[in-house]
Image (cartoon, rainbow, N blue to C red):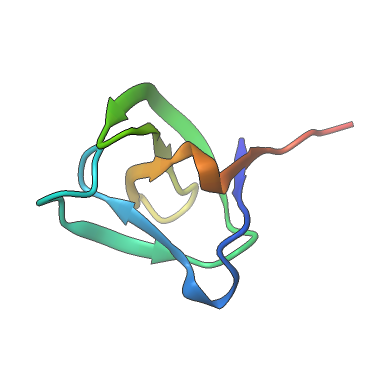
Length: 74
């Protein structure tokens, strides 16, 4: 499980596939949203990407690792 970090009010662009150039935004995720990692890592446009799945909603897409932090459960 990972959490969206360091995006503030801008929110995280979750994309249809790894990369930024010519890649559509699937949805935007607010700071603190938690996801389950479904695939990756993959490289694209100089960044490392992970496919993230949102439990309970069925939404999924690719997010840059710079804005994801592992959730540590006790």
